[in-house]
Amino acid sequence: MQQKIQTYIYNHNLANSGTTLLVACSGGVDSMVLIDVLIKLNFKIAIAHCNFQLRRNESDDDEKFIQQFASHNNLPFHVIKFDTKSYKKQHDVSTQMAARTLRYEWFEKVRIENRYHCIATAHHLDDQLETILLNITKGTGIKGLTGMQAKNGFVIRPLLEISKQEILVYAKQNNIVFREDSSNASDDYQRNLIRHQVVPQLQKINPSLHISMIDFINRMNDYETLTNQQIESIKKKCYSEKNGIAEIKLGFIKTQKAGQTILFHLLKEFGFNSDNVVQLFQTFKTLEKLYSSKQFYSETHRIVIDRKSLFVVPKNIDRENYLSFVQLPNQIVFNNYKIQCKLVPIQELNIKPSNRYAYFDADKMEFPLLIRYYKEGDYFYPFGMSKPKTPGKAGKKKLSKYFKDEKFSLLDKENTAVLFSGEKLIWLVGHRIDDRFKVTEKTKSVLKMLIVDHEK
Image 1 (spheres, rainbow, N blue to C red):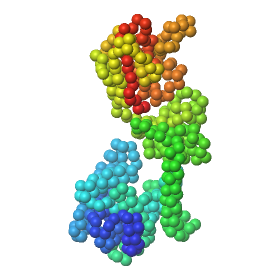
Image 2: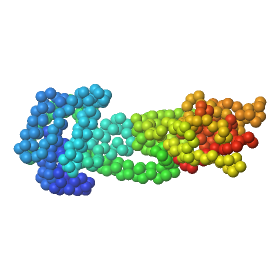
Image 3: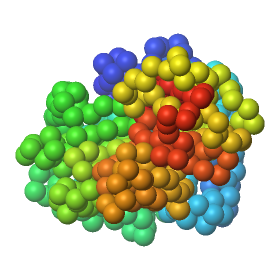
Image 4: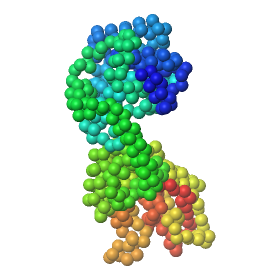
């Protein structure tokens, strides 16, 4: 078994002999065998033990046992006590999840502080089998079928192709001392239920279950590699990102037979799950012929479906809410907008027909000038949009109605700035000015504004 583990470490490039590894040790047979093998393979090791205080005196006895073992073998020893029950209650998670989060955060802290090469855990082939069966039970994609990886960041798992039976045989042959965890006998935990009730039945069907599992995992890892390569190829056709906002062309994805799975792969990095993707597809079917929008949320992002595209936007975007000027600036820099401002005599005015330019009668301007984003209730008198009954005279229009009529997307509404002169909205920036401030035959001086930069 020792040679088998050495080969596994080499093939997966887990660590070099002679480096110092921080070994997570519970005191059970798995971690005590791992320590013995690593020492014999000429690794320098330090021991890390977490006392989760879940089994009263038994937890304290485990800690004493490992501490005495480390002292007897002159091994660096790190220990910590966790109030696991309080953490579980505070974060509303299971006992297993609470313990997992606490230990891995602490392991990493100890590794960094002591400059250990990596963290070695004693997860073995039976743990791997249980993990995959749990993932299947809960509903999983290919990733969940690959199980635990030999190396994940600074965490390595040298025993992943070693069965529990092999570990027990090694412990007996090498007189390994260890402690039994009484909680392992209980079926209260999901893993124990699978271990005691499910796996034995599967072994009746396939006595070579563990060997088959190794082949299965290797095959699933290959499939995941192929899937990721295909997703990257598809991504080039339907995915773009600008200023932290991702856009996904739903029309393209809908033409793909595996559209929902493709969308899941594109969205999972933003914290969205398969249930979200199913809801998204259903929502898109009802909205695709409309100009309304709908949003979905993960912990870090929100999704906006807008006609033929899906936008993924960070929940917290760091940007200014408004800027105010008591006199005319040479330039307005407001988040992604950069606008030049210049007073021009009417005789020198050369109007250019572009939405990047805006021209105002300077004598009608009032200060302060204020630039911000749209708020409910904003209105203006859009230049060039006459009332039906009074040709040549613009009517009052709420921005919300203007946005709807002009088919603005939700993101366009959120990211289009509005400029105020005093309390009057004079420019929907980059789109239309207010008729009340337009240049006329009576204008003597013109305020010319030019958008020189705007990244949406």
